[in-house]
Length: 583
DNA sequence: GCCGTTTTCGGCCCGACTGTTTTCAGTCG
Image (cartoon, rainbow, N blue to C red; front, top):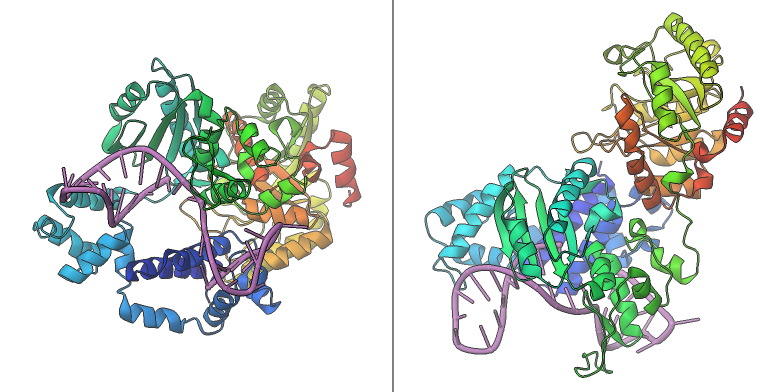
């Protein structure tokens, strides 16, 4: 059974093959854009297809809708089979090598019959590439290096790893004399859960020292490029870092450009063209009716992103929304969401103590949360069946309740401390505590921890059972993904959202950067359906409470406003909500 | 192949860097 991701991958593969074939680039891009649209969908293509809604999706027209339908119904695609007979699919892997694009791939294939990375590496080591047209010894050496780098590389980097690394490099570069301002751009600034490479922008009139500082850092494994204003390095960690330097007067256009997404930038540039300007990272330049830049006409520089959007007739669009997922249209209609911020968070509804697998006592966690400005917390240790997490028996759970009540009193209203549980949804579909225990608790989180590879029907039923229980208030990290090692469980999210809508149960955005679960597209859909959200730390140690900004970033990417998030509510409102749910 | 408050046909963002070249194509973001 093909998933959204399978179909997105297939379209991307077709795009590369068409590019190698020499197809016009716009047709290639159609497949690529369709793949990207599908990858971000919060719903099963199968369900959308059943409703006849495929062509309502962005970048999907009649042709691609028919291809999706064929893939869903037969698991195969006639068009792809024919294309494979013409263009060896192995060439797609070759194009993944840094520095090798469709033209080179075609050259190696046509001239030397190379159709695999192994074949290419052997040819390069045998010195067979250098004599090809537009090739030389240097190119050949670079290909060998890039293939070696490819095998070292582990794919995309979790945001939680990339962001601290990027901040460290930014500080290094800002220390270079002449560096006036700096920012992390790219997918880190947009808050994507995983990062392809680190993009850093520096404002300065003297780019060379900054470029030199980058390539001479001690943790640089390889210099990928070293130009006057733009350089790239690969770090020993495998992370790629791109740095660009522009004048401060151009900071607005530069930061916009460097933040992306590419699709968002294309939309902005099209809007600029409609207003008679060509937009790039340097400036707005007037164009004539043919679309060519008028050379001697004055250009407009923007020092802030606000000015860039203003010139396009738009309000400022927060970076987290810049995915060409409707934010341009919302901005034009003055309907951008008032995105949630860290300051909106009052409570934290999911955390652990030494009673299960945490490092601090109830009292210490309460103090740590208070020190961070929380007004209320819920202690949610693991339930009895989770042996690996030192889960609490019913007796220990009730014992713990006495301690939580005592600590709540001791805190004298500085912070409220509630008693809850993170209860397992067991593999057999049962919940880990009986109703008569759950009803004694202030708040119940239900989570998946074991048997995550069950088939869709079985594992979905586990979550639906929890949603139907009136004592369950929140589904913790709903898909149980673990970035980048573990895929989300194969859940019928349509069914889960429908059930949560009916029961009024909240869904969590878990802030741990290895989870970020729900991810943004799901969070956006949940909010659209009126399902309450909670943004929690799931802290097992006090410093993990500082991971909440990752959850906020994810929520913002999901167009989430504070009012949809139950732990932004004042404690009285939060308590009233849980009471209304049956306590 | 998609898309449309200029268009149902004719458009489709834009520049930096590299290597191999004597002026630019390919790649990347």
